[in-house]
Length: 229
Image (tube, rainbow, N blue to C red; front, side, top):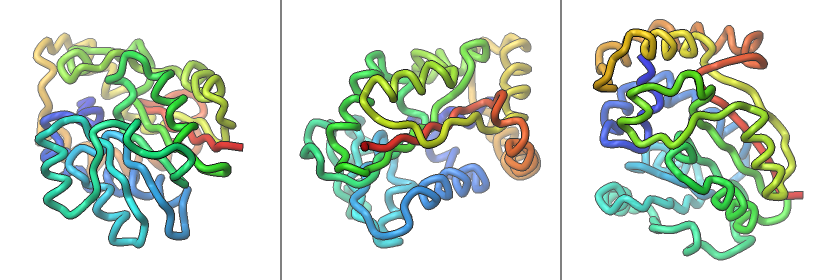
């Protein structure tokens, strides 16, 4: 049931069917940037969100090291880089990354690079899997190095020299679904397409409403926003 952490993997085509989930992530971006901006999609996958933001008038620079996925992005007519270093310092207004940092050993270095790439006043949006206690066969299968506690990610963002504007957990019901998945002892860690779609259609909208109350305490994922002062 913890299928929503599969972004950035070979299951991106399946994740495209999670309409409510993808709409939620898109709204997270729109809540942060209203006017046309220069945006970095770090770990852009197959360009799902970059394509939508481009249509809405933003200049989107995709960072995607996977050659196959980078080719898919290029075929959409989007600009893609293999490394964040390829983007000039202090040149972008906004950076977002969805379910990517948990794959990277030195996540602190990446967050520090985010600060270098941002103009003053620029913002960053980070969305990652939460709570180490939920780490399961699914995490191992897709190459997750870690899951995050809020205080730990906030500390890393602050250590990079960014100010925190928002930090809350998301998908509180997904926390319990992930816990059940782990306790059930599924060693394969495979994504279940039917379960994903059912969760997206029936449970995720309810979970998002409950997040207004419970998101301060727990959730399957973690959202952190910061800015360069």
